Length: 345
Image 1: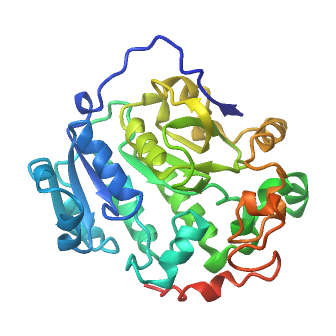
Image 2 (image 1 turned 90 degrees about the horizontal axis):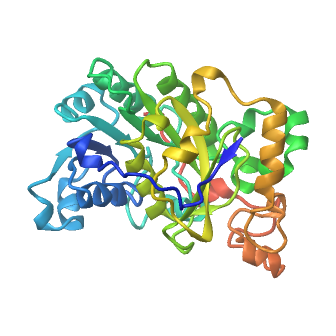
């Protein structure tokens, strides 16, 4: 099951600020989180930026945003601090990771390479997601998501049966799934399930490879069944996360997404989101997932169109040219050597 828009439907856009006045952003100084903050401010929505370093936040965002942006030092591993920080907010967007964001950190380089958010076991996800759910569980229900989680495509694939992996090799054998350093995908999957079981109105978006060189403002293609492979610009991810705040059709749904370069972004996400299943209705059937896989594999970047042949650190273009990627040949990569091991706290 997958969905996209033509971009030509005559629809009336509801302004985000008419539905939410203040939104908390966890990980507000991160690469994607900072774009979410800017997108919210551009739409006239107040922001509570939950950060570890307020001074870093002040350097990142212009002083002119001060009247609508409040930076709050918050330990995202503390339920008490999270609940206090989001007081007075209408919703929250989780863009945080449990690793160091220091520019010189080896892990930052790995995160850029993988194009996804990484989090260690017993990371801030395990505390922060349930804390946000608790904070918004008793708010007014208007049918809109109260907690929006930025996750990652591929989170369920390590747990697939061998039979399923053989059915969908172009999804199961991509580098991040094949290597799954530190079990990061399993941890994200667990955090997703915690949110789904919390009782709060939520939305979980699983982007494919984050790539800032991929054209921005491209057409998003959403799917369910966790077989999506492709690229999407972080700015488009930020736009989708913010759009979901005002989309009733986003509530209670988990979906993957990448973007198609050369196709205009839609005027609204309501149409493609309406085609997706609510999580309460159960996962899509095997036939639907198989049909989705066949369709989406035709949209894989590059000419080779064989994502299972990629090595970690190798681009689709390098695969086309038979060039070795940054971390060596497929099967010989040492992803964990590129980053410190995560702590248990």
